[in-house]
Image (cartoon, rainbow, N blue to C red; front, side, top):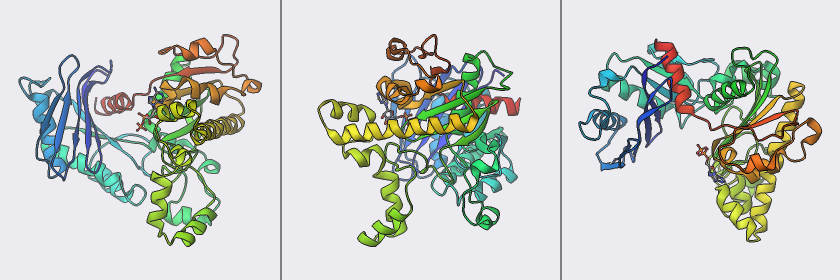
Length: 399
Ligand code: ADP
């Protein structure tokens, strides 16, 4: 469906936007509002033109959205004549709990349901709602769609999403695995099916989608539907990430909180912001810095990279076992798309399950298929595009 969709990703003090074509993915303009609630700065980018940077007071998200609208329709820096040209707005919403298994057109009921999910996404959902409300005020009557990070994972069977806790906490309190990066995993699943020549008939396909960025997660996808994923109730779970620990033994929390007198907020601060490959290396959360440090002989940087590759490899093995095989493994996001060495470390040693990388293809930037011609399992590198997925879902729902 060809439409002009404004994609909004609202954070607590920032707001990213893209005005794009929902069919071709062409980006007309994109940008970022920063320091909302502090002072306010807009960076507005139009392909082929110089970036525009402007200090604009943004006490709330309302002024931020107003600044975005003004930039989009500006006779000089704009790309449309009026906001009437925007067919609909698609919002990224982080936590949809068990309320949303798909994207949906926003109405009062949807807003109430997103509010009910705030306890699961206390940092993100309130900010996402501020973005939605600001757009409703700036463009009354314009169709708005919510696209949830959790929705694509709602097809998981109970054995994958249930935690081995007293069942009442699932029933009464909604404690279960939800999973994140769903918009990316959904886009990647679609692209992998295309690459496998199975678009429109995914029956029998088994795909492992590896979203490796600052935050990272894996998803096991059978027949185009998620059957398991590595993140949990929140995005701290799974394998080590840039600054997040991934799964740890909960006993560690009791031990460290006792020793250092931390409360749970301080403990979670360590697990969210000071752990992962940053925590192990003490160098950086950025894989480029870690590779450089490891090359110069920094042993902890080397250990951090080793740990990351090892844990991702274990998840791939686990998901192959869970699915009873695998047809394709896809690498995406900052690390997955760019770090050929990390892809090699992860995939090497998996020859026993039919994974054989072509080293030359893996080292060639922009090459989609990096498995050897005789590899039983196809291995792809596919750039993710969460904004396009949001635009596609939005166009589909409002057409
Ligand atoms: P986010 O989760 O914030 O969306 P990205 O998917 O953009 O993150 O991934 C960001 C990470 O990608 C950076 O922290 C960096 O470690 C990694 N990265 C980006 N480019 C490269 C590269 N050329 N080589 C290795 N790692 C890279």
